[in-house]
Length: 451
Image 1: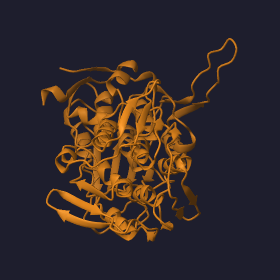
Image 2: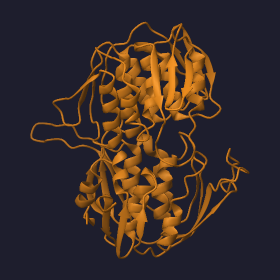
Image 3: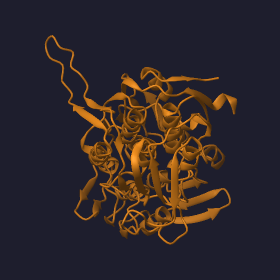
Image 4: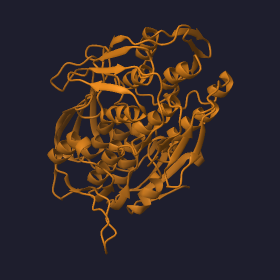
């Protein structure tokens, strides 16, 4: 484990400029969508993260030719020779990503069969695939469970269906979209997720020739088509990474400009950031002109001095406060005066990371009750899904072990804000979703090193 540790000398405010690329939660799905086309697709601004490597490997296993384009961060996908992959080869990726389940619809369309290995991902709750399997069965898929995973076939093809999600799951919505676009007939999905990454995926599918209507009240209608072409697309920027660096600026009393960050998809976060006492400035992109090279826009985040203020917030599906934003922000809330309340309503086991913060001097108590004022589906189910954070707390260095991606970045922020030298173990897990994070830390003046 000594090769997977970062030594963090805390207490220095982060200051400088970094850039975010395409959203992790969109890019991997866009790569899967390339399977649906009968022509090459081109995707720009792809971050160099572990999840992208996993999906690239899975695509190549299935005969998709993936090449680097001329532009940095550009990938080209040629799906002309899609083929079956062996169970053993697919299982090499089992446990490293939950993306394989989204291959089902496209592979059923292209090959007539698909295989899902045991799925991995972050340990923040069961995240069952029941919604996915139920939806695929309604499209006409036959699912056979085996010890190594699930084998799917479509003896009579896939057909449009009406489906209502019991909860607006992002993954299940993506599954339905990637399956419905080539299914015969019309598909109606109710209680769908409408996150910006979902809308961007719909834009990609529409470029390929899909007919998709987004109605009010979380209803999406897809009219199946006979074929899809390729796409050329530049994805929306990663709003999770942008917010993570914003929280790091606040927790360390620093100033960080995040190039590429966009205001529209971060409005809910920006409101809370300002309510806590943080300051930000949106800078627009300036196109090149004669005598001027132009400038990429973004958002500049900083701690304006003085005390931060406690807040009460609930995570929720879009347009609510994103669950992936709460972990980094809670580190900053340990520095706010008063009692902050966080009610997690998306994942039932997402507050386990607070134990490490308490070890560092924070005062955080977790509860089974719904403390946000709105009862949620986890209430009275014995899940500790609400937290009360008392501050301001003086954080001190500690040895930390990263449990999952977002908690890992939160632990890193805490180590940066704490006095003394911390050792953060399992730090390579952060590479799943944060591109070149060590280089970005150095660019912001952080004192970090590999032992």
